[in-house]
Length: 426
Image (cartoon, rainbow, N blue to C red; front, side, top):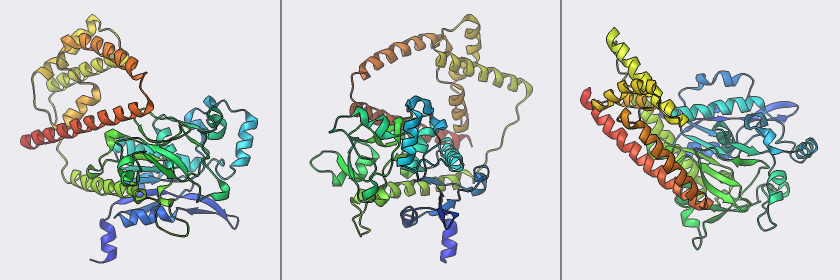
């Protein structure tokens, strides 16, 4: 098969370019190391140019099998509630003087990358965020950033805890220590390089901003000694073999190489890209399979349509009661009956029906015990919060990782069982 034919079969990874000025003209570029690794592991990098209006044309880049977002300027602070930083105007001016190339906000790049990140989260498209890309991922899920680590974080640290996250005099050679969270992808990638079970590696650093409040869906992968989160992932969407990969790394593993050499500092440095592309390939295969069969929609009679709406309203009422922690009133009790009767009928549901029920809140088998379950959940949540308040960050990270894994196993098993039912019906 010719190379031109082969390229058409490989999955596509979108990468947004960064602009710079050369000979008084803007030039778009992407770091070559990123492109090399994407190609090496079996995907095709597709560069999305950072030019005006591209954020409105992203559907033209379909199909999208993966997204890699990497370096760039600071994200517009308006995207993450910058007023919480408490920095004075003169402090912001000083930051701009110290980091002029980073603090030049690029709103077009922000628009393109935030839209791509949200698209990945909506469709479970594999996503790898490096440096700024990890910050985009956190912000797109409601997390916040330090506008300047030195001003907001390092002043609160002891001398031993302080970390230099950027060194312009030794840009590529600068390293600092991070501690890996156990039983996480990052731990697995670098496990053979860990000495004496210290869970520590040295990483490069090119940033003056970083994650302040991590979005709720994510679990930390590593910390610097000043407490800054150096990596995170979504444990519920991490399974490269099944096309699931949502990871953000603050450091640049692709540039962690020996001086005057292409040899990596650690064998695990390229693993983020290898596992990411593995997920991209698996996602492309799933996407191809899902488009080969489109089930026909069923037209309901007027009577069945009324029943469907009553059931849908029943589940919506149940969801609203659950989310608001409010008590069920008499009128709502009658509205729950249609949903309860439907679930008690033990009808075999297709996978699409199961997903729809989850979306509208069908989480109980019997409306008559719903209020009791609500009260029990409230008691359990209070006890859990009290207990977890005494736990360390590392313990909480391990706990989240464990339950994330259990949830994923349950999800995969349920998906398999529902698929079997669907095959039997069809």
